[in-house]
Length: 303
Image 1 (cartoon, rainbow, N blue to C red):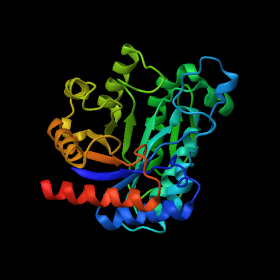
Image 2 (spheres, rainbow, N blue to C red):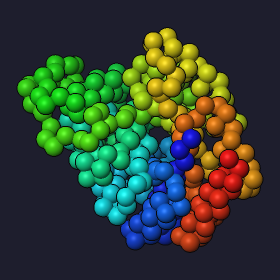
Image 3 (cartoon, rainbow, N blue to C red):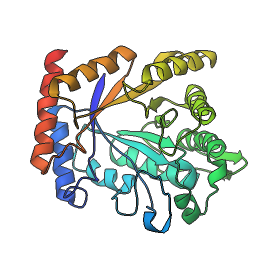
Image 4 (cartoon, helix red, strand yellow):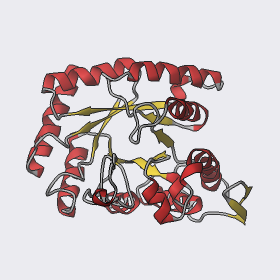
């Protein structure tokens, strides 16, 4: 199982300090962590002007643009894989995301894993001029288009949302195609319905290289993984073709409990895992790095 870190970009004093982010990424790489992941939001809504707002973040929460941030970090690291978890693909232009991803993959030497999802916040879709109601159907077309652009010199495509006439990307990415992982499904932000969650699992089984579950060990992720594996087999694929990335938060559990959670994810079939140091009351960069170091040593010692 490959173990990485989640960038605690929303932590006070860290997100706006680019030197601190650089040090965090370099420290994780030096310790032997495999990847660094971060999410994205283009805009945050003002909850004060929206009575009953239920979103998990607002305009007060900091989110870096992942392609820009990872492009910067690519020049300062050598082995760390860059993972978007996730880019909200249907609110973005397909060909432009394909170009941005290809550029990042190239400058990093093939170190991009592109995590995508449909999103939950209509505020962003409105501002970006995209249709919130068709995002699930559109993302499947977008995946097809991006893979074509990453693997073919010239592409002609006629879809419901995307049209390309005998054109192609240059430069192409190192990975052809770039791995596409999907986030969402059961337990996602925004209160995904049972039907919607099932559609996400079926989409992953059909099209994705991996899944970022929103559920945790105590909230039914094992059952969801079993369902996903059934759907993968129905698509005629082997379950080894679709990775799963779990997450361990250091907020609350003891070090020993975190190690046990890593083992539990491995037993469920997770191929990847990320360590999240956010929300644990760590008041300095040094404390975040120290926790990463101690947990890495503990996990390595338990293997």
